Length: 266
Image (tube, rainbow, N blue to C red; front, side):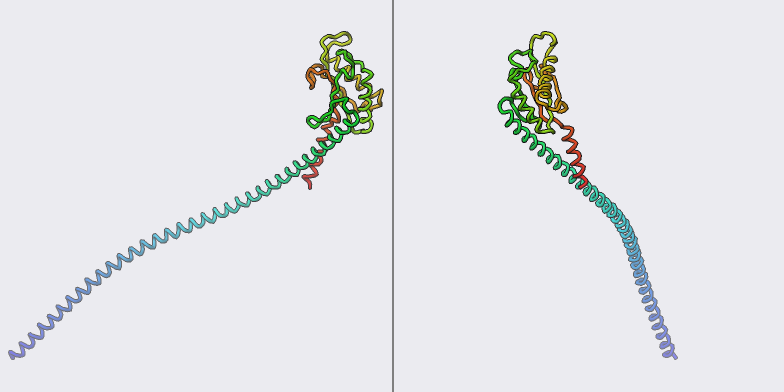
């Protein structure tokens, strides 16, 4: 009996020990599980933070992308406008270039005509007048002593003036398109009636030349214009008569304007 009791006691003790060991094992497992749970919770929290950060980055990227697309659209529109403006500028430059070429062509033509007129008068008049081109105008300068004699107050043509005036008239009659301005310049110091001053004298001298061209040499009076410059003329104090040839700038500029219009249409 005693042996049986000992055996039972021993078995119970062993079971208790096994039970306690099992409890310790379960406690250890529970502790480990709690640690794993805490670690997992921590990792989940970190992951959630990363997700939020990535979501924020994705949103920022979307906003940036939308802004870039909007800017690209604006840039494309701006580039298109700049291209259109550049095309307009180039077209304007081309038109102005055509107009400048037209003006240059007309000036060249005018210069060629002036050269031809200059040569014509030099051949016909010779050394009896100083013939030149100045500022695009052909003109000749004849000393008043050659036209009116040595008296500085004379407005009656000298006989020797008829030769040079006749040769000038010959050119004017041969060339219907040529016109002249006769410009009187005088510098007398004392005056007798009907003269009051150099205005009177230079006007009468220029008129005497115009009258001779008309009456003696049959030049159309519509081709003649008379100007008096007194002592304030373009030749300063020189007592000379200037005969300006074909100063029809209005007609010249009308031709230029018309050709510029035609060039812009072309």
